[in-house]
Image (cartoon, rainbow, N blue to C red; front, top):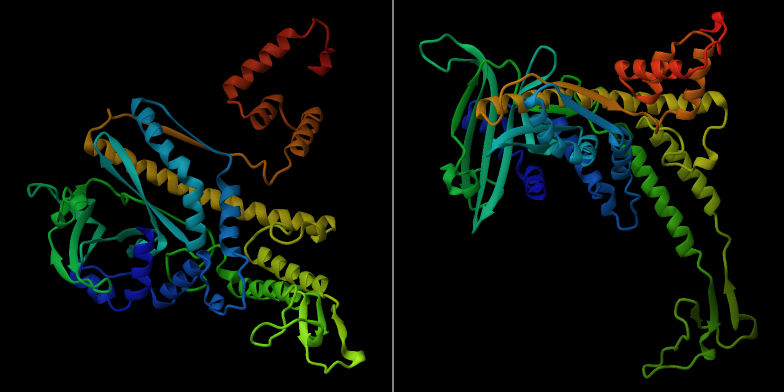
Length: 477
């Protein structure tokens, strides 16, 4: 599905899904600029190891974009825990959300690579499922005063026989009335329209949704009132958009390192060529070899021997080619480029570059770690906000489809930061604060043992009860 949509968007976006065509089909405008379309196409190509500079067969890829997105996604999600409690509805949402959490690292990687991702829940039977719509599969059509995307067009395409079918699904926030007798209320209008064509690069003619079996049960239009937020959640990379500063769309986590990544691929290719071109060779007069039926020399090891037409002269009968390699200089240059990529992407030195020659001074190390901590923390905050919106949308669908009894829920997120924080050092530092009466024992247990205050109080009471009478002097308690 993703491959089909991606190729379609790259090849026909400008001539098919123009703002005019979308407006004609759904009476909406697309809030995306040409520079953003071009940048998104480049980020996708880089992530798929198909960057433009790789068309040069002499340049080999380090596949850095995928490595960068994967490393950040792992750091953001690997220790993430979500607790949803409070009622039977909360238990239902927790059961539905666990499938989201299982896929979250993978989906975050796509988000980081392409700049954004939409989580779009929908009811199916007694479940609330979630579509994960990547940045090249949706188009924003409205942004609120806070810069949040509130209305979108989502794209789906498939091929049946010799025809291509395209479905446009729009979610438009506005003031709607579910009953003519009532006044308008804030809500969302969902529309589905389908098209068919014999060409993959054309929208074609309008066609019934039933033309595609999996679209047959979709309503052409539905209006949901009394909601003030969209029924989807948009997650984007928490960085300023330096491609189009007026856009609400996010940018790739490696958007500011595109040229550096190209430089790294070129330098890596130079490194490989250094070994290939510097392979040892023995140039031997062809008179030393036998010949085949066509009179050409028969080399015992083609990779090692080269035939030399020296006419049998003694001083040219045998020559060895064994040049001095410059791999250290090339590797040092590559490492310097990798460090610049790490800086541009908000990663600590040594993540991509050689960790043995990273920053050595205490100030450099601290600055490097702070950069990583800030990047990961900001991404986790953005993820939490998106997940809260997703749970709200799932809860709304659960109410609308009546798959679970109504009830309140409370959600708590825990992003354990042991990857970027030395837990042992933090433990000792906090213990020292307790010893100096700067931190309470209760706060220390909550922070280091991940206990609730209620549990921590019970544990401290048990500890105090176990102490022998008179164990502490009056001033020590």
